[in-house]
Length: 331
Image: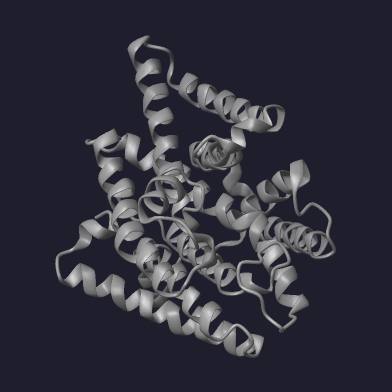
């Protein structure tokens, strides 16, 4: 199956946006684990914008690629997703994130025994850091596989599977709003907040024949204007949270799909190929700079975190692959 270069580019963009967001989180008013005397309002506003669209974009790519998976000979299976998602979650959590946090005196772990850090913080998602994405995506695939098998078993028409996914996504999103207690159930709240974007990616791919005409010059201009307008609104505090933020996220993701070209470059393909490793290894390294140099100039913090540790994560990913340890990356 021919690789879609636009999706390669979107995946690379998604991981770079996530890495930038993690790199500047110390300046966000909503994150106070590490104090700093530095103030960077512009970076705080950028982080607000990133918060709205970073994970929706990531989940949408997974949903988009579901179409490829379902049309392949192997199809989609729980075992494949366990290898792809849960094994990296456990290995990186136990052998990378937790040891780095402990070595750097992570405030969230103070006074806690190791068993509680592993069982409660990591596995039950009280403080699983950036790794929450993997079990949440695993949960999504379990729901998708169950829905697909149901539709196949009862011999419903092909379009019924899509309808079931949309209904489930809307129901999950509504349940999180109505039943606030779901936020305390491990991964349930995260599932409810993000499954809508997974399904959006799937539906977008299924109906590209209708959507593709939007990728004209006029369509791109309109999409760029909508994307900028959403970013400006979030910058000024409109729609950073709540239902409005969901609407903005849907608009921003759709605009990115329209704006991204149908080609990529070698650096983009490298970042896309190593996106899982970048996601896994980059974030824990940031605790080094947050713990040791919290008061350095913001531009230097971004340079160290985004560029320096980003290259380190890229190097680790390539090294693991060459050492035939790709299972750590879910490969």
